[in-house]
Length: 88
Image (cartoon, rainbow, N blue to C red; front, side):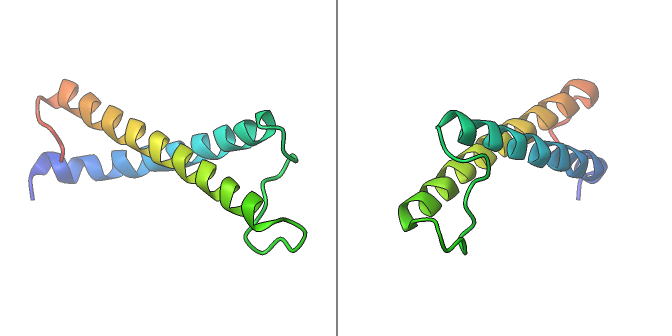
């Protein structure tokens, strides 16, 4: 395994945590803007409809995927700027 890839692991883990927290906060705000309750439904919420639960899951998944891709890409380009080597 390349040294840059090994050195990037702790950076990638830290960025993943920050990205997850950011995505969670962004989803909560998005859910409120969409005009829903303060809390998104869980899959086991008995009082929520299938449509609402699946819609919430779809929105949450899309936000997490976009944030993850942006954080991963930003981290990799930052490492390349600092070291001259792509970590992937």
